[in-house]
Structure formats: C-alpha cells, structure tokens
Image (cartoon, rainbow, N blue to C red; front, side, top):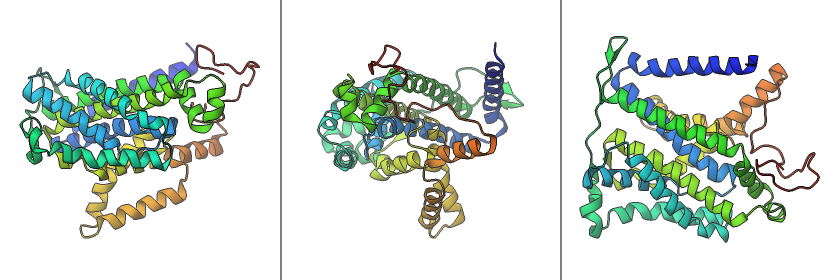
Amino acid sequence: MSARRIGLVGAASVAGAVLFALPFGLDGYTVSQITQYLIFIIAVLGLNILAGYSGQLSLGHGAFIGIGAYVAALLMSHLGWSYLLVIPAAAAVCAIIGYIVGFPALRLHGHYLALATFGLALALPQILKYRGLENWTGGTQGIILSRPASPFKFIFLGEPLDADRWLYFVVLVTGAAVFIFCWNLLRGRVGRAFVALRDHPVAAATMGVNVTWYKMLAFALSSSVAGIAGALLAITTAFVAPDNFHIMLSISLLVGAVIGGISTVLGAFFGGLFVQVIPEMAHELSHSAPSVVYGAVLLGIVYLMPDGIVGFLKGRLRRWTGWQAKMLPSEGDLLSTGGNKTGKWSDDGRA
C-alpha cells in the first residue's frame, strides 16, 4: 500500500471516529442542528450536479425537496412504511418527476430554463394546499409524523443513543452513501459528459455525446438526490407543511451552491453551511435586521472568493505549497483529446 493511500485511510479513520463520537458530546438541540446541516449538504450536492456540472440553471430545486418530503410523509402516515424504506422511494419518485420535468431542458437553457423551474417552485405549495388533496397532504396544516426512536440501546461517553443521535447517524450514513456515489459517477464518463454539455454542447454532440440523454439524466439524478434530502428532512423534523418549501428555499440552495463552489462536489459542504448556519448566525448578530448581516456576508464572500470557497482554498493551497490539485471532472477543457488522436469517448469516460 502506497504512502498516499495509507495517509488517506488514516485520515478517513480519524474523520470517522470524530463523526461517530461527535453527537455524544453535544446536547439534543445541537445534534439536531448538525443533522439539518448534513441534510442541506445533500440538497446542495443535488443542485451542484444540475447547475454546476451540466450547466442547467434551476430555481426550483426546493420543489423536489418538498416532493421527496411529502412522498416520505405520505408513505409513513397513510401506508405505514418504515422510515428507512421511504428514503429510496422518495429518490425514485423524484427521479421520475425530474426526468419528466427535464423535457423542457431540451429546448430551454440559461435564464429561460431558470424561469421554468421557478414556476415549479411557486406552484408546488399551492398544489399541496389544494382542497381536493387535503385528505392526503393535510392542506395548510401539513402532516405530523411520529419521530423514529433508536432501535437498540447504546451508551457512549455516558450518553445514550436517543432519537436525536440515532437520526444523526441515519442522515450521516445516507449522506456518505450519496456523496460516494456522486463522487465516483462524476469522476467518470457521466461527469465528463455533463461538463462537455455545459462548456461546449455543440462540440460534445459532434464527438458523440448523447445530448438528450445526458440532459435528462442530469435532471433525474439531481432531483433524486434532492428527494433523498427531502425524505430525511421529513423524518428528522417529523412534520411537513406546504410553506416549508417556499421559493426562498430554492434561492437559498442556489446561493449556497454558488458560495461553496458550484462546479465541485466538495462545495456542497460549504454550501450547506451557508444555507443552514449563516442565517441563524445573522439572526443572533442582529434580531432587527438579520437580512442585512446575511447580505453583507454574501457580498463579502462573492467579492473575495469569486470562484467559491472551494476554488479559493485550492488557489491558496497551490500558492502556499506548490501542490497541484488533481482536477475534478468539472475543471479544464474536458473536450480536449489530449493523447487520444481519435477524439472519441472510451468506455471509461476518458477522451
């Protein structure tokens, strides 16, 4: 085993130990806040796939979070499904809806596509409030769920594994699985195709990239990840209501994705922090005008870090150490054939 691999395994082991012990040293409220932060990481990651990698701007991502949350709530409250089973169910439903919504992406792009998805975000809360669906959706009152308890007893550092800590681990494991899946997918053929569509759609089609298929796949994959975040949100909060998925949720996710680094997987970690933590910090700093603090922080980050937080950190790391970071699939001109004179796409996704 190489020294680099040993270092990665060691770092992963330390991180895993810290994440395991973290909830046992904190109170229930703080654990719940961290759990919410992990959920928003997943949500921002889904938007990064669509807007950052495939270049399809969306202002309606919050709608898919709402759909995922309501799918989970309906299956749990009306059909008695286990909270663990509703997560893949919400992902599948949102993937199908995202694939259908992706049809306009074949003719729309840029701000026109953003306006179309904006309409979806505006319409969803009103649909959920429709009287004809009240028996299912609960109308304006929403749906109250039973919060899952820990399935077994466990004590660590003198603290029991209560509901808050158990749900933290459910979200953590689910988020890790989603992150690993997306990381590997975007580093291969699919990720290269997405970036090719974003940067040079005409050239990508000329080189044999199926533009229609990959645009639809980007919508389906992004919507599926958002649905997972929505299902986890419903499970952890034990409550869903139409007004929880208003248009500002979609805008906040887009802001978080841009601030973190919209063309990177790692940017989702900083984006989730900006969505979940910064508004609360702004409210603590100024109860009368939290939006002023939020806007000032937003403008400062955009001015100082135009490439997002991840881009800024990479630049500083290269400057300080001379280390050249391995480029993610979103960076560089991925349509360059390099040493491959044929310019065709191989089975492993390399040009």
